[in-house]
Length: 207
Image 1 (cartoon, rainbow, N blue to C red):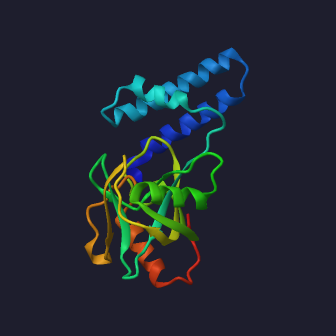
Image 2 (spheres, one colour):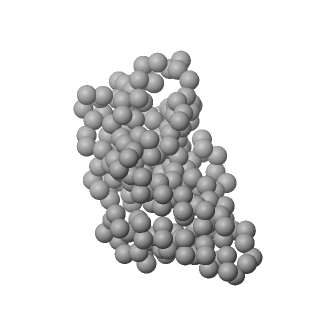
Image 3 (cartoon, helix red, strand yellow):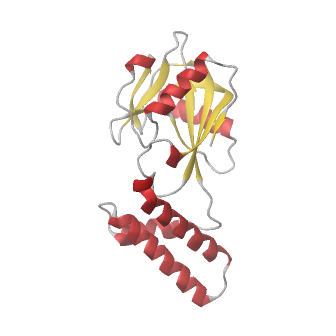
């Protein structure tokens, strides 16, 4: 999106700096890459209410070759065709249950864990529905580039239960979706998940 070119530039500068720091042994190059990180931090800070030093600390914690982060979301329907959503404590918006995939964790296990932790339901991952680039689907800006994975899951057992991150759990019809946490889930993504529910023969979406 045109109005977020600044974020794309900052992410690319940060990725170049981070990857450069992962491989260089030249102290002068280290200094140059740190300077690039500082520029990326200044760009991000200029479009937010966070100080450049605070942004720089976040960027400098990233190490190794820079790759997108992976966010996973569970798509769970009940026997009435309603979609499972959880309410985020951070912003009060609703979202598909999910979060970061841990290192060493298969996507199927990650989504089953996240749904259990955030909603109280034990589920089984059954089908990959979509693999999206966060920047292309109307989400609020995020400091790092990330991919979003949506996996259809079937309920095995459990009952609604809040968590440290969520304080609401419910199943919603397509025409009764509450206000969403747009950094995590968008209306277009919700609509697409309902479309996949109606067309289980469809292949997975991807950007």
